[in-house]
Amino acid sequence: MNGNHGEPVEVWLRQGKPARFGWRGRMYTVLFALDMRPASEQECWQVEATPVRTVPPATYELCRDTDTGRWSLSRA
Image (cartoon, rainbow, N blue to C red):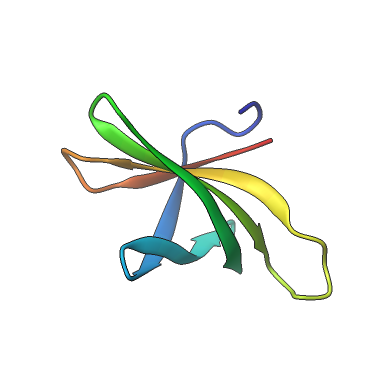
């Protein structure tokens, strides 16, 4: 993914998958968790999410550093 690599984000999980995240002062609802791929020292989820249901969803990549537990966000 291109764009905003590595921006810090707060993620809430439901049944082990991202369900919501807070980014740039807004809360986003994950509509679909499309894919999860383990990578070296992190796990990354590709999700479709929107801050408001009337706004079409966008695709984001949420990655968690397995050492620190910190999440970061990239956007297409």
